[in-house]
Length: 502
Image 1 (tube, helix red, strand yellow):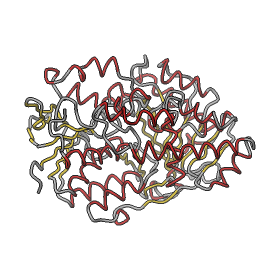
Image 2: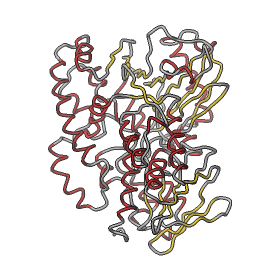
Image 3: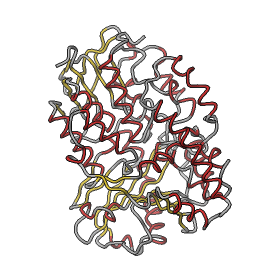
Image 4: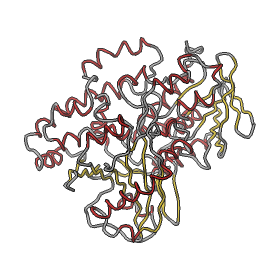
């Protein structure tokens, strides 16, 4: 065991799980405290009547990041969970129901572009060649490096300017692609991590390259099987998980944190604390204001920080299969009023009458997610966070009805008479169950002024041994982002070359 070896992790989302497995593999004693009744956080699994629904991420874009965690412990990821590649990666529909498929076959993508605008094939190839450079800088070099000091940021500014990071993802793609629908197809990716393509820095254009390089994968048994694999690995290494154990307070002595107090009054001490809870929630609710600097006062989190959108998600199972070939595993349905809809969600903070949707259909790849002869789905609609004047206790039902009717009219015939299981979540779930400030689904919005050093740091500015992992800290949301944050936290704790953190 290491000296100063005790680590407490608050929350068991993928950031917390990644950090737990890594530090347990390094010989630390790890205790994970989870508010809910089982692990996963946003990756929680709902189960009912033989149906399994992944509540959170369903797209695995960098499988090697999971492989690295198991390898650190001398294990093989394949012995714990199996990944299979999806083809196509996505099927993207326009408002008329016409679709565009893409995968990692370059010639196939060019043939798909040909059907929309042949002139854009050359532009797409130029787009891909430039996103490789963005990927190599933004992901390979910077994603798993902490930005704790302003000098860390100053060193990379010339590269960020050279890569046109001051442009938005949409505007970056629009330089190369003329067709409006194709522009949307090659720039929607920020929506996967809580960003508006018309606001998010073009650094996030690297997601398209990341997908092309390593593919889109699905974990057999659902994303929950990845959660279970990481829990199993951590427990094999001596880590411990405590469920139904919400944290009331992080205990502070001077410039260090010493432990946690649970809601039931129990106190647990540790040498290091990692919060996988929402960063704003952690500072405003778990650390008394008298111990926080002005930098981390309520003013910062309530007035000076922009938060991502929230989500309305319907999980449903049907007593029939939908295997006519119209839908694939991952489907994106873009509304006609695309730019204005996103403006309503991110800026105007109003719930629009129309919507763009992500429709997940895992049983096409993995029939075990539903009883025999049945189909499992979830449909996700981006919506404003709770800063909007929307009463979800009254609006959830009509909003649900509008989405389901749309799906029945356009994609899933006789849907509602075939539903046997259904459950939905809305912004109140993210606020009340997941402790996310304003019910934001992805925490801090990924705009340039909230990226790298400007994003909440992986080590607290106030406390030398308090660390952050997950969507709200550097580098950001999405599985590659939160797994990178867990690697950063591990290396900061193991290295501890700057123990005071200042």
